[in-house]
Image 1 (tube, rainbow, N blue to C red):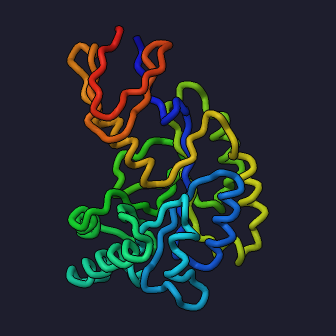
Image 2 (cartoon, rainbow, N blue to C red):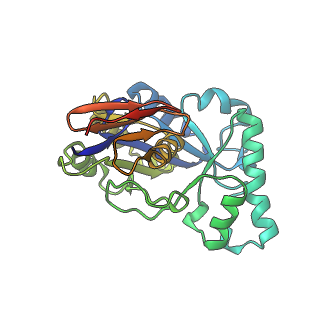
Image 3 (cartoon, rainbow, N blue to C red):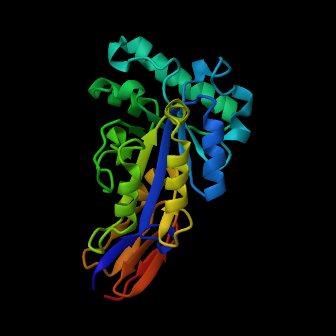
Length: 266
């Protein structure tokens, strides 16, 4: 029988948003996301908090409630320019400060200016960052192959409404499509395009087949999915992770629970 992996609650598609810098326009964007039941990840520069035009440290817990806070470097530095000691400090101190202010464990980031290298990626692994978003749009809906070089689908200025229509009508042979949109909230204010992001949210909201997810929750689920252990004959499966993973075997939808070993009818 055919085995087809699914997203949580047997959803077949996933949607995530990613916004950088932490300027005050995050407030309006989050209000929009909340009204439409959409999840976002917000990459913040902890050294810019409380400065003019940026959100404040004291509002992080309330403002980003229900969304993800992630790193973007303390001072939005060009990471490839930094000696290794300053590189470690730019990333480590950002994670430390954001964790202090948000009282969360911070595991994700995006590369300032989209700049990274092997040395930067290796540094992320050492300080415990699990994923990092680039600015290299794929124009596709595929599951990422490398979470430390995570390439999004598109920027919100890249004819995003047309792309959304394609996402909503992906053909059945496309498995686990992910629509990943990134940008900066200040761009909506600067370019007077708040109507476009609201139209996008209205278009993609409240769909029974879509999983609305933050970057880190998506990473966590796909990692758990890939860590499932199947017997050679595929008649048993073990889930060593701490979250349930969903798949379809033939016509049967199966949720394999954390720590569960399940016999499969094949």
